[in-house]
Image 1 (cartoon, rainbow, N blue to C red):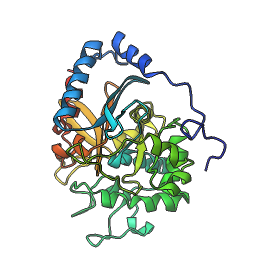
Image 2: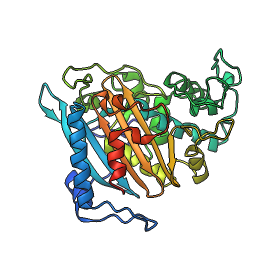
Image 3: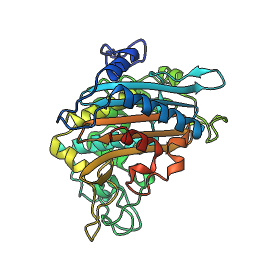
Image 4: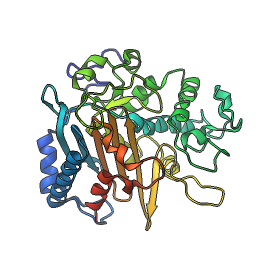
Length: 363
């Protein structure tokens, strides 16, 4: 626990930096056309952002999503924050840019960062048999951490993609064996503290996990959006667990900051990040859907790195355009950002109408 480092407002991992207000961020987005670092188009100007906001609001209504929170990062800056709808419909509490949402499987890129840091430090070889860490499956004794991290552990390991959160969560054992700490503690020490992610924590319904990460759960419970069933009307209790596979909570702004750290090679060396952003290959050389902790979609020499979250009352989305250094984040308090689009079956990010709306704004 990081005693003495907590703040009165949100019990953060560290003393918070001065944060730009949402209005200032919106002014940046509205009045400044963003020129990408390499000079390439597209630009995100006020017209494009207005169209995007309208399309997102339209999709929110279509899919009966009570509340959403969005962010866009460009280069090192968060340039757009937007709150949509209600965090709690019964009490008429609106979503704000400080509203906390569950991430579900959007936790996986955090776990990938930790594991790849262990690779960089020489503590982990991704091709070590998982059995060394007490991880055993009946289909094959030759499964490695790389197979679990890339969702290629089923069938003949390493040759085919099949998304499995249940298998991914076994990577907790690897983290614990190599660090002596659980996943929650390592998230705090390796990511939360250095990146100033004051609004990110393990599931506050698991107080021990929160405290292991140096957090107190009560402030997060107070700002946590209430979950709803797919019809957007009936409340939905959130899942109780936390692991490398799912269970973090955060704000759209904090997820954008996490993404910026990936872009700026703050978390990992460039060559390690490139490994994470490279899709696996089947026996015949066909690209698979997933790299290491991220979905990888490539078309016409354009790469999109992305992930989604989907669980009871939860959905989350991050879409990264690495060549433009642009990232789009959207969090919701029902599962309807993900449920209608069969996400996870392959790498096609355009299955998501929300992701497509963002990518279309870049054309």
